[in-house]
Image (tube, rainbow, N blue to C red):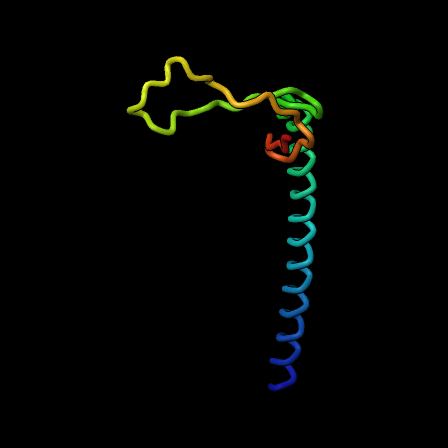
Length: 94
């Protein structure tokens, strides 16, 4: 009786192991498909870089004191030069 139970246990465990390996292979294949689709879609998107190195830029000057009239004051700070373009459309300026 013990041997039969042990044999069933071994068979069940081997079946589970094989099924798990198949599922892992399916997940890996599905991940590869998704990555390929993402890469294809990313190629279709326009470039997010709004600025390039050595571009001249200016910064909006928001009023520090809203109650003070600023009609005749400059509306921008700058010009600045873009020294480095960082990810997510961030830039370093000088």
